[in-house]
Image 1 (cartoon, rainbow, N blue to C red):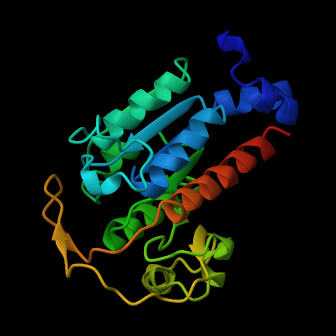
Image 2 (image 1 turned 45 degrees about the vertical axis):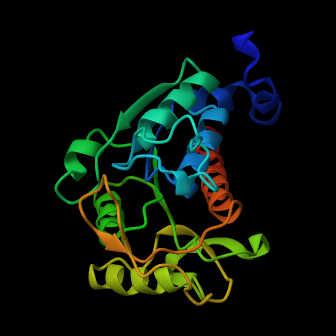
Length: 245
């Protein structure tokens, strides 16, 4: 039965494409609303080796947008629940789960060995900046998610080089700060052209399982973060397949 798992994909990409995907090693940093859906698309897309990085645990407020968040998984580490889900989809996949916060101090430990592609799905600006700089320095192809919260219109999601983004506040900050680090182009991102929506949530929250960082609580839908993740995964899969031709 299992040999037919990717039959429909094979009709699109052929044997060589399936082999390329099965041999690929991809990392997803941040397994939340964006990253969990990206990971699922990657494993269902035939990627053979996945590394999942996220320090957090599943809480009830994740249920509206994170694919691994269920009543039965509340309290579990996100990477653990997602790795289990990946192996239920494809038991032959090689999945490594790191319940660790990505930072300058943990980067070498988490990203040793390199990857064919890395998906940046984290929301900490400091960590995103370091992660992208690390990938550029170590020649790891990277695609980064910009702001997916406080958005409602799926038709305004775009893929572009960071230097060409418009209207996204996170992208504006990232352009400025990466420019100070000498990175002014060559960073693929998924972002939205939707106009800024005024904040209406609680002033801040502190993650109970994280390193004590505080952040503004933003509203989030059941469709925009998943679409960001699926778009990122699609871009990665197409890029991996292009290298097999």
